[in-house]
Picture 1 (spheres, rainbow, N blue to C red):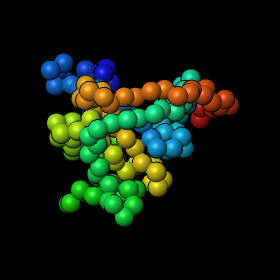
Picture 2: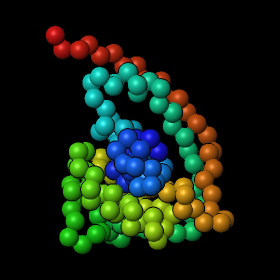
Picture 3: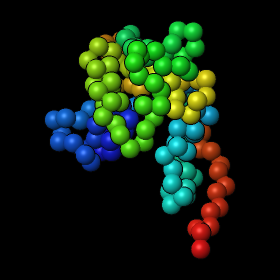
Picture 4: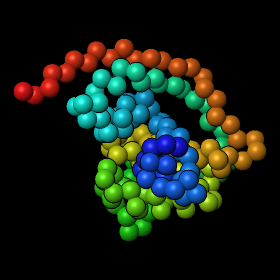
Length: 152
């Protein structure tokens, strides 16, 4: 991975030996779009027009679920609040969680920072076990009509 994200380290900030890949997925399209919007600045709005949404079939054998069983949109890691995981500037805690998760699982189920009730599944492709699979079922190129005038 070139760019660092919440639950993985990329070569933009870390030496190659300290990086690992992650595939960020969501359990619903609106969650995926909401997560993307959280990280979009006014300057980057035009890039939303090149987004592609893919529906996947995910068959994994080991998923670490960091969600409250009563409702996965709540975090179930004692002593940590979801707001701590959603800081867009400080990834130290989420990198520790991602690194720990990938040492025992192929993926991490985590509440979305969008606060929608559906959640995120972070897949660690380098940790996939034999028999696990990710299959693209279909792909949609949303037609987004974004016009943005920069403030004068």
